[in-house]
View 1 (cartoon, rainbow, N blue to C red):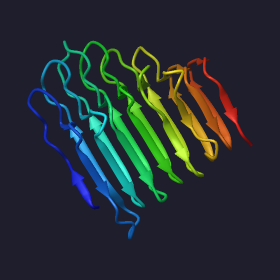
View 2: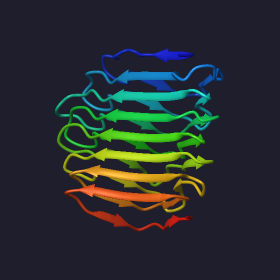
View 3: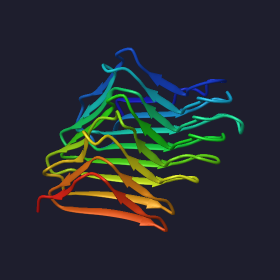
Length: 232
């Protein structure tokens, strides 16, 4: 691993926060393990105790040839809210030369908005000939597993990579993919798979792949408002 950071459990706030144009990059493709690993746990503050925050248009995490893993766990108190596992309010996570990207988020304690993963603010995830995995589970009481908000950017594949989105909601949707002007997938993507566990899928952006497209909502419903296109 070129860069591994476990952060720290801030007593009242975020485990890891990258902003202000922070750049983390790996260019060593000599081995198959992770090039970048980030692990963060939110603190014990009542609200907004997020595991990992990435903010700012110029903030980026990128790897050429080796995988990226970003794993966040929300903290918080039972009376709080917005204790998310991962929150991007901007920035770019990018993999090239077959690098895979995995975001894994688990919401924390609180009354509402304890989402597993939330992206907004033109936050983008891009992979070239690699796999993108978003795996989110909501925390206590109320939260969405994986939510791409109305200002989130593209989750894009160039080349023959794939996208898997796995979401488990708590009294809310498992997966919400907002922003009708944005896309998920790519014209050469081998497949795109959206899977919600015992909760709904709400697709409001355009989904595109060369190969198969899967929309699986176990014990829930699927609501499609964007265009779904398989080029094959």
